[in-house]
Length: 294
Ligand code: GLU
Image (cartoon, rainbow, N blue to C red; front, top):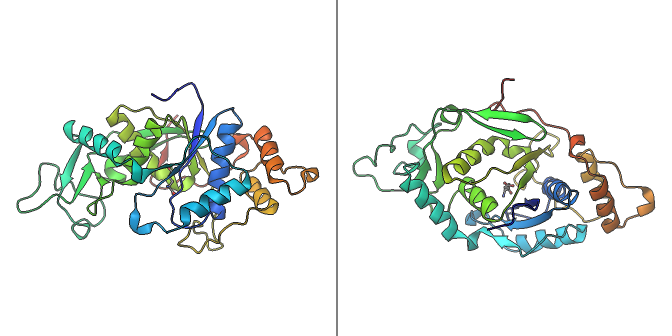
């Protein structure tokens, strides 16, 4: 059992390309949040979506983090090496009647999944994927910056896939299993994942796992307003002082003094000492979530 008295954050990149400015912000924000409070920072490579993995991306991500002085605690973990844990979680959900085999293809399901296979596979259909059974109670969670947000999973998401038809376990399940197994106490990541959090909180409840502290960081956007990502042509970052300063500014943190020059290690030390998450700005709340009525 991981020691729950330790603050433990994590960065969980998918190895789909080199570190870009958006992923640097997520790495830096999660690092500073944990380290400024004397915690640990873990590195987990989320490589379950094998068709999207890019050869060499993991090595390049790790080398870039190290060059910035963002050193992680303990060994790097890889989701591809943890499949039995996800399988065990799926079996628990199935045994508890909280997940079910689904025989529908993606073409069968336009929009919200109508629950076709909830009461068993229709005749002549084989299991393709496994879905988590949602209910109509709102799922709420507290984000340090956004306050309490709620989502009606039944209306906004529907029964969602926990193991895909093409084999891999879904991100939503794997992330919940790993964060708990690794004793992660806080999840600090991009605001694009705000909308995934209620699904993760529902899975935690179903599996009897603790809910970590959540803090979602402002997204880095392209000039057209899209999330910066490999798909929107994000360039690899160069580990230099100007990039680190820009990432700190994006997080609303004070600029390291000029006397530190271009020394990345000293700049990270300074940023850790003066980190205050309350200076981080929020994005708009996604339309699929609603602030809890007070
Ligand atoms: N692997 C996810 C991504 O790269 C991040 C997951 C998370 O931080 O929960 O977008």
